[in-house]
Image (tube, rainbow, N blue to C red):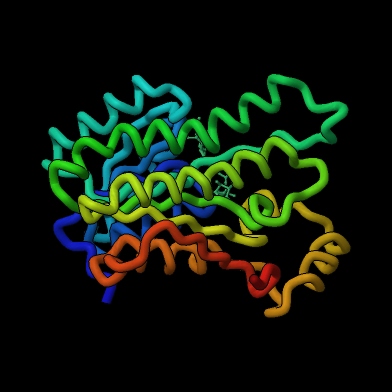
Length: 248
Ligand SMILES: NC(=O)c1ccc[n+]([C@@H]2O[C@H](COP(=O)([O-])OP(=O)(O)OC[C@H]3O[C@@H](n4cnc5c(N)ncnc54)[C@H](OP(=O)(O)O)[C@@H]3O)[C@@H](O)[C@H]2O)c1
């Protein structure tokens, strides 16, 4: 199941949190996995751990907001491994604040990273995937992109934008058997959610029908499936992985 042998995968934001676990799971499924973030030392540790377990990973630093750097990253992956089969646009940031107090800089950083970063990645892999006539693009959005959240106008807009980007990508590339899908996680246990007070944590859990905060492995499992050949007839979709918080 979900065999990714002979595939090459690029995972952004692989230095920690959800991206780190996605990189580990994709590598375990057999793909040569390229771990990307701005901090080389952090992704080197992730890649080294994967290699020590007998799987294959490399670390390449890249600021995904920079389209030129992204093009160079994809070129070097293609030269090293001969293909780019899977792109997981996972890197993301938050700069929360109410709209009336949100600075233009905080708006721009979030849109540039979460939305333009995914566009830069999609653009950079498209030529290679079109030539191959195959590919998987998986964007990590958020339930906040579906339902909004006070204090997160920039983040909600970026995550809703990712859903539109996914649909446009899916329509543009479908004729070459390239799929593009989106995942909208709910609350996932990461460094960020671990810092919440017991009271806020319990209030959050009360909103989740399955009664628990999600794990990064819950997200990695669906990424691994969508990246596989078995998911070849699914494109342009957004999957909420949120313990049932948002039901449509
Ligand atoms: N945690 C949740 O509950 C939750 C819920 C819904 C959606 N999500 C989404 O899931 C994704 C991962 O979330 P997370 O909580 O695991 O995040 P995280 O722990 O804060 O990690 C973010 C990752 O993105 C990288 N990154 C940030 N800016 C970058 C840039 N310009 N270029 C390259 N890499 C960059 C970071 O590495 P560097 O700083 O070294 O660059 C890091 O590896 C995000 O898109 C987030 O919005 C998370």
